[in-house]
Length: 168
Image (cartoon, rainbow, N blue to C red; front, side, top):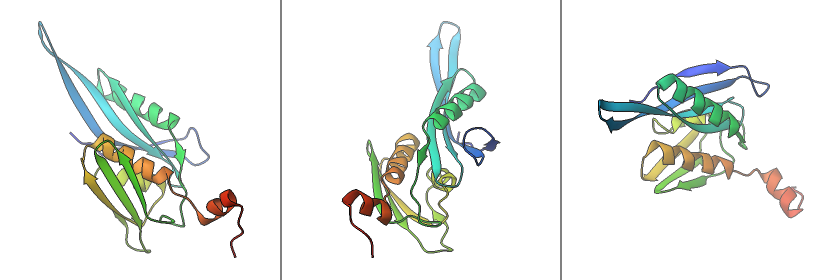
């Protein structure tokens, strides 16, 4: 039950945040009268300019779960170091049994990624990237691994400041 949905919210950062529902999960609890269903939503929020967040919300109805997921994603916004429209260097992220490798690409390549990872990269502002997923392709762990990879990106200027060395 994957849903692709984009909405625009004008709260938070200077530029408006966009939301994308990556996955809707349905859970059933068996009770005396039959089954009671509850829902969970996996949501990505970003401004397409280097800020992205991942959220997970659970409720008895789908809209409530999506709203909780959006609120969670806004609370978990992180900043991503980009080099133009791509990544400054190759990076790997892990979460559980999922491993994601992100490789910078030249202009015109586009976002070469799986269906679940693409919204995270697009909403982060990355337009040219190659990706490969290893291990488990569970959407939750895949997105967490992708976010871990994006957070671990470093720029040459940032590294030179940490080391106290000037770039010539």
